[in-house]
Amino acid sequence: MAHRNRYIVSALLAVVLACIVVYFYFKEKRQSMQNPDRAGQALSVTRSIPLNTATVDLYFADRENIFLIAESRSLLHDENPSSFGKRIINSLIAGPTEGLVPTIPQGTHVRALYVLDDGTAFVDLSEAVSEHHPGGSKSELLTVFSIVNSLVLNISEINAVKILVEGRETSTLAGHIDIRFPFKANMLLVR
Image (tube, rainbow, N blue to C red; front, side):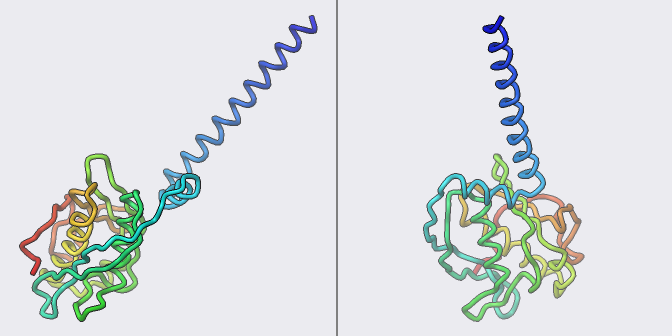
């Protein structure tokens, strides 16, 4: 009888332990789906990813606002294309250092950046990208391809970029360029 009771107690402890493990697993999974930035941070804390410096080309507008010109910049780089992409977009938002013209309005921030297995990156920007955009079809085109080219041409895992505003799909940033679909890099705008 004592042997049977020990077996029941052991089985109950195993079930309780399994429930605790499952609870924490799904709790972390739910939090990572609700806040992907936090999930990436948790991953980097639990799995040590070495950071290296990489030289990237960021695409800003020329003084006449006609073409994009690459400005080289050194950024911290890790193996996660989403976090590296977010660094690239934050550097675009910070603006150029060599006399070029910013393409993303000040006050804009990256809400999230995801890269799907098929190579499509989703860049979710704050509403400031639309509210503070200077307008005009050429300026809007340069904003879109500044983002697209800077990601696609610097991160091998990304081959197309879809821009979202405040987590939603929108038809344009400032009334001219249809952004409902992902874009590939456009070298015709680069000088």
